[in-house]
Image (cartoon, rainbow, N blue to C red; front, top):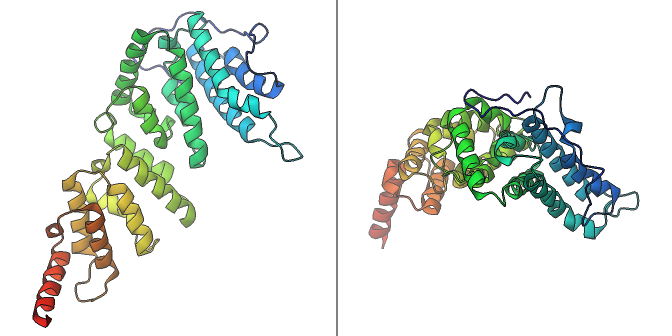
Length: 330
């Protein structure tokens, strides 16, 4: 996708694309395969598209470097042994980080300007398994931090610029893996519960994580529940929207739905959590059934989330009825 500078962005300096692959002394990498990964950062022009600025080319280089580094670290040769020696496997990320630091300190990149599109790099992990997604985003965070390690004032200015982008650029959200927002907000020094645009975030949760076959969808919903809870963004949804995602009675059994709701509601605003539980209690519970599945789910959720049972009238009535019956039979 095109990397377009929004209105008000800092002006682009004249093109400064470079290729340092022939002069850079690799410190800890001797293997050609591992060197080739780091070389991507040393020659961003090689992955640039026609007309790219250095900021755009560096964004593409970071994405390519992250993807290639992961593949190199997990790849095996014909005999089943790692393609890259263990010593170099351990040094690969560190060497890439050293390159980013050296590029900034030597003036080949101006981190505050040339990492303008750094947030877009976190789209590289879309559709990846959770383990790979986490690794890629952690790698990118390390690379960006290393570029600023000798320029704390520039880092703070860059962070503010990124926070402004998050607050004001709705189109940004479709370019980013929604699971990466935890790492991104930590990277830019933003608060988890008041920085994201709620509607844009919610839309990407639905589009990126809540589609596919039943098995794929359940795994996606599990990840969606986790990221919503980590970011404390439950109230981006209405209680009904939240239940449509995480309490689909047609697709998942009670135990599956209970797990999703427990993860997704954990740490949420009390009023929202009680509204969700109250909606299940009023709409789904069959009070005439002694062992109603939905009642059992409500009771389990109330207990696990330590919520006041009075927010669920049917569950509260059942508790009082059982207490009275126990007293009478006692």
